[in-house]
Image 1 (spheres, rainbow, N blue to C red):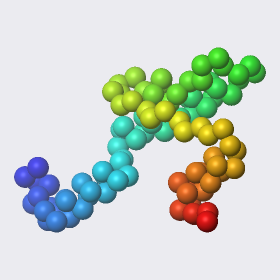
Image 2 (cartoon, helix red, strand yellow):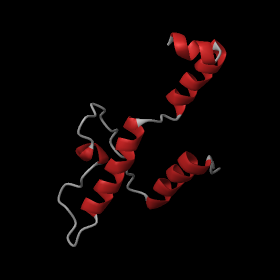
Image 3 (cartoon, one colour):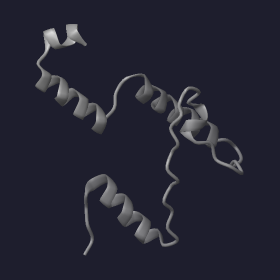
Length: 92
């Protein structure tokens, strides 16, 4: 850490720490991306799996638990939820 602080300011280090808290990078993020690809590949087989695979199933060294997906009975409400999450769009 001493060498790092010799190269960048404490303020810049704090910004990088805040950025990592919002949008993590590094090995854990790479493992998540690989897990997503593996889960999509495993779930996209000839017959739908009885229990779909999750990215964490392929992340061997992760202790993180994924939140349960939010599935609503009403497809229109599900679409609104996705729009709000992805685009920040709010319906009246």
